[in-house]
Length: 220
Ligand SMILES: [Zn+2]
Ligand SMILES: [Zn+2]
Image 1 (cartoon, rainbow, N blue to C red):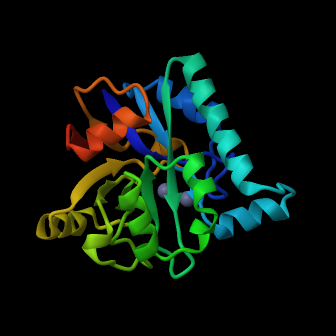
Image 2: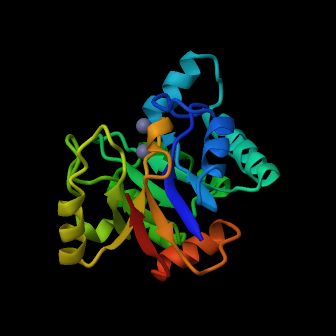
């Protein structure tokens, strides 16, 4: 199975240019079997939506994600829920797999956490935490022990993510690595992802695949 682990939609990400419908129809035309929607999930994005009249960003986020999964199902593309978190301390982005609405309810202050605190929460709850594009400009390197891994192959064509350095860094600190397109617009579709023999049907399967390194990274 071919899976893109890093995809944005304009329904939630202010920087996204493709609606859920467009993302699904574009990926249907590729050889990808599944995508993970990793929309931006942080205070700034929440405030921007609230200014636009969304009074409960979290509720809106989860409802929209459900809508995307349902639409994927109707169209024969597996759509899974992921997140791209950012905490108030800096501009670092973190890809998160295995986080659920229940976790958000259990820990309502997670928006205000720092990476050390969220890392602890992730470890306690079996959530996989990867720093996204850690060597892109404006990113800050964090202690490797906070992370399960890093995104070593980011396919975003309008940023230099210095993937070669990320690969070396992961080797040096024994971090798991993933790849994803970071798709925001049409030309980004399908530029990176993973390939696995495991029959992924839901997010639990995907976490199993990632946790046990049952995949190879694909990138253009
Ligand atoms: Zn973005
Ligand atoms: Zn992203």
